[in-house]
Length: 84
Image (cartoon, rainbow, N blue to C red):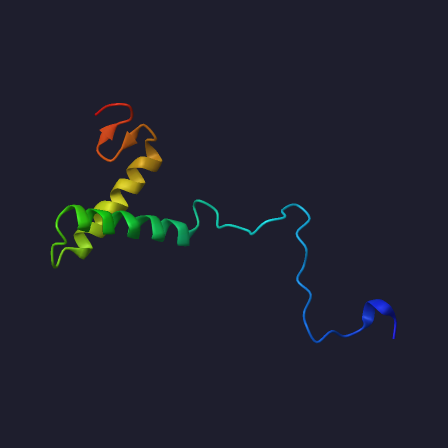
């Protein structure tokens, strides 16, 4: 058998010649978006005293805030950037 055709019991991972570290999800990937909304909804829930039966409302509010921020980068959590 030739050297390159030798079967291996352990698969050899392909080398990424353009990136030496771990590959991170893109900022617009579904996973990152979901985690961002979940984190923001959780923060809203904590800030509001952990209200019962408001999970859907808080999720939608967090989702809306994310969409607003992405469409208007100067908009941050209900205030314009640089103002208090």
